[in-house]
Amino acid sequence: MKFKIERIFLWAVLVLTFGAVYGAEVKPAVKPLPKLLELGAESCIPCKMMQKVLAELRRDYPKTLKVDFIDVWKNPQTGKQYKILVIPTQIFFNAKGKEIFRHSGYYSEDEIVKKFRELGVKL
Figure 1: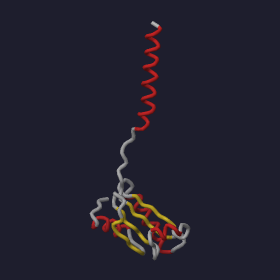
Figure 2: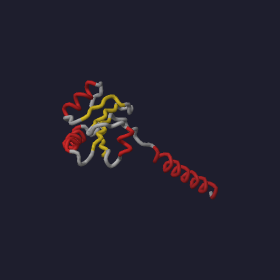
Figure 3: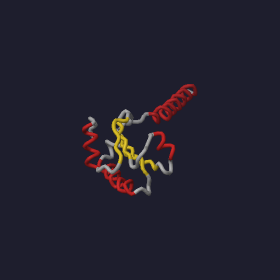
Figure 4: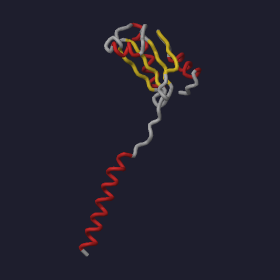
């Protein structure tokens, strides 16, 4: 009888351990999204105008487009990394992270969505 209880206890420990270790690792796959990266500055007038556009894109395409902003005056290395000459600059990336287009200056939400479509990216 004692052997049977120990065996059941050992089995329960193994099941709980397996569930805790392997169950926690199971997560739904995250689908990579196309991305719009805005490089600008918080105190730049055209960049401030673009903040409204970025907010609209985040609101209108929350599950199909990643929208990021980097202040290159606060992060000058990032500006150099992306070879930014003018702000604001928008960089379009496909879902695989490859740069597919650049634009400098103000760009409306409609123009951005239209450009993604022209580039074959469905939002």
